[in-house]
Image (cartoon, helix red, strand yellow):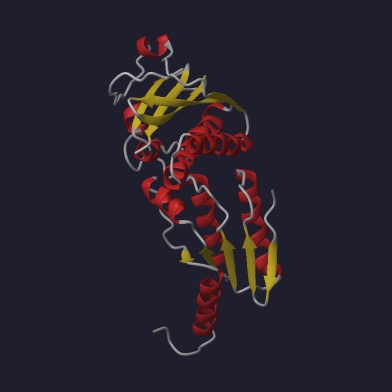
Length: 159
Length: 126
């Protein structure tokens, strides 16, 4: 689900990865939420919180996860109008985790590095807020290509 | 879901009771800014105790409410932010600069009373 659009690589999309060891998603717990309007932002973050709670995350982490999902879904509505959120349960060793994939076929981000700079756009009113999402999560990965869309994948592990 | 706005004396109290969409938040902002004029209110309390997520849009809208009502002559106080929400707001790197906050409704009302006292030429602020 976190696969990148093949074209995203060749079209100059910048990928930023912080990957760790292999993850075996042995859980069938996966949800897809299609995003079309601002009401879906609420739906996506509520589903994310519910899944996080089922996976044993505490209230604080549930809130951080729900907030990250809210930002990612808002980016879809704001910049691409439509897209989807995939929520997935993870297990690595004895740890549980949650993966959130936010994917759209929108205009893409021309300068991913800039969009990831702290302070870029979060207070300016244009949304994006990717640096914030990165701080809320443990792993963050983005692939974006102008004219083709953006896929952001984040993971959070239960401590 | 719309947020009810109650008039209590010279204050308006808006208590958020459920998750809000962006449209709900904007409606709340516009409602408060309008009603401050209609009731000649001197203060606004927005109770966000039930708000389980505050993302960048919610933070910005709350900031807008505070700034817009101030331009209309009323101070806004945010009350009831949950500790987890406070953490996520800080981690997101968002700021509620220029927005008054209090622990709960009671503290919020006390703050507004104090402000009104100062404005009406009472004893100077300590």
